[in-house]
Image 1 (cartoon, helix red, strand yellow):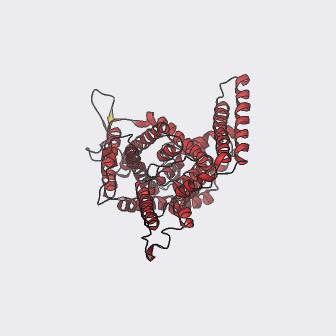
Image 2 (tube, one colour):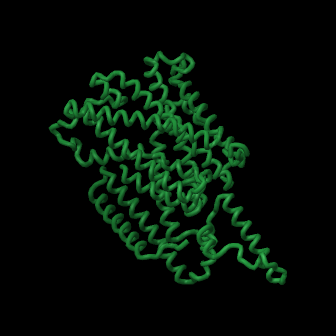
Image 3 (cartoon, helix red, strand yellow):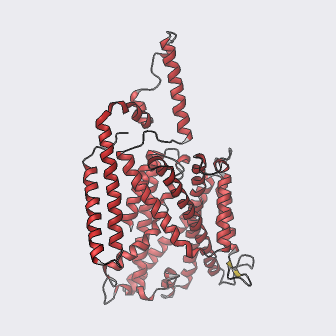
Length: 467
């Protein structure tokens, strides 16, 4: 699961450094594939972040109730209750927490990052406690969870892969880092580092916690709702249950902020491109935050968290996430081999390029009429500087040297990317469809594998774009 997540993270890291934009996967799809697919990806991301944030918010109130001594421990205006005559369980606590996080995000990226850092630090401290205390109990009791007659693979290799597919979604969140590209001082350096470190730390902590908890309690004896707390409670450490529950609340609050942070920026990017009303692209002059988009996001998420049991819609979140990851991977191939001639840029970078072009035009016109002064004898910006600071300009300047060979290379690369995508789809679909008869399944796997291999071989023999 970590390897699969790392491959997606590498794609996000490359694209976020080459095309820094708050639109994240939406913006990459807009550049490389087109407006129609980008519109679909944008709404898939909106669905993911809205439903994901609502689901996380509804999971906080039960854990808060445990800290206060049970379901009756919360105040009546925050406790869950069912509406008479309707099969609806409302959760005022979830809606209240969504509004609190929304207000925090409206204050500014620095304030919300500071709060996120505090919550994350508390969560990491609890995880470290689980690792250290659990390892002590494991060595003390002899790691009873690993003393199984079935060995380390009680469900076989198929069970391991099925578990990995479920665990994969625990690593989701690095895509939110890419949506802060326009608020980072040096996105080309900071975003890849942030994405890589986030994935590495999450993977390390998750693996160590899993090793310890599975060693304390056999997998069949675990409480599915509270596995970590029940593992310590079974070893007469009831006091640790409250600490772990507090850590769970901190983790859920951090996940809630991570879900509500990127969605306003997706709305802002889609609004800039004319796919949503322009009101969502308004940025507050003091906080430099799309406040209106943030408030709209919080209102929708709070409404869902208050009225709806979003567990039934969780599968749709997974579909949207996988669709976005797939398009990001395809965008990497397109940007490497057949990049578009004109790449939409963030407004701040576009203003810099326009100003450089305007001043350069003025200098050239003044030199042409013989009115240049000594201060204009030096070029405004060197050719090497253009290649480093504005790779898109360099690409346009060098475009005239490509002629027919470049045209043929782009055609071959485009067909190779198409064969690679079709082959990957057929191979994964046929391999996962166990209900298909073997007369259909195996030929599909063969065709898909052949197309995938042919596309990869062709791409490996083609020079990548230099821009």
